[in-house]
Image (cartoon, rainbow, N blue to C red):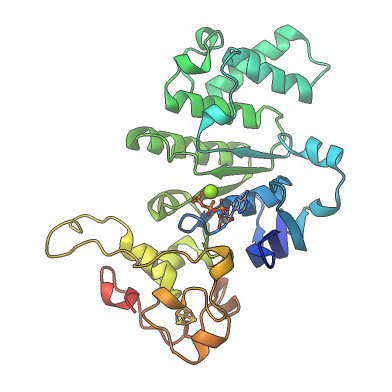
Length: 339
Ligand SMILES: Nc1ncnc2c1ncn2[C@@H]1O[C@H](COP(=O)(O)OP(=O)(O)OP(=O)(O)O)[C@@H](O)[C@H]1O
Ligand code: SF4
Ligand SMILES: [Mg+2]
């Protein structure tokens, strides 16, 4: 049984002549208790997918097709009050910059407590305080008894992100936590600590974590499964070891070649990256969206036919006409990403 089941999702924005499709025919499941990594370059639609699950697609954008099930609930047909009660309760989101979640004029203790009050209006004030302190401890905030009186600007970026995480979990029933680039704004050591915290909390609360990042290194350390997005579509979905050992989609391979590795900065081995950029929603080629940047393309099929996401090997889904023919992956062979 899936915790989340997204079926043929399409999200559009109005365009000058015709609607711009930013999520295109996307189907994906999230299993109970798994960490699913979602990767792709900037503009691929990762945040829009998260917003679709949260029911927060910004206007004038809208979900034009598809279904999103959360257990048995069809999220897209729920009324706004029911959605609101799910948000922050069973489904929570952590954003890149915690200051967008935190209010600068209230102490962090008051802010966490306010959210708790919404979920548990019956709770006594002293009990609430205790629970807030306990939650702050759980998210690794040092000396929570003193910190509850501090304001967001008095805290480091890492502690602020921990506060945002505490707020996201305060309802106590979170089944799906979405983290959208949760460590991008932090320095490297703090990034590692926050990632560790996510893994610990995910286990402890037995929740599912949708971890959005453009960094495959982060995915390698944390995720059970990985979904790779390109230009509003999924191009590859697989278990993490399988994806790293046997990437089938040329885009995934390009991302893996770009991954910093020991020695890859030396002159002999310049770090390859994928030439070109992600096409914008109004300019996606009619065949394969990756056509312009692909070293394996063929001018007939790839140019004209859009590939579908298909299960090549068990639980390994790829959207490429030549997924089966592409040779085994070799790290740092940059020739394949250059058309
Ligand atoms: N408010 C909006 N109006 C119109 N188009 C939008 C809006 N917000 C996002 N888009 C478009 O939707 C597409 C997907 O954007 P999204 O923010 O989901 O990308 P992303 O993968 O999260 O990128 P990043 O890694 O930079 O966060 C992009 O082409 C973007 O230009
Ligand atoms: S379908 Fe063709 S252009 Fe697209 S990724 Fe595969 S080989 Fe490259
Ligand atoms: Mg984003």
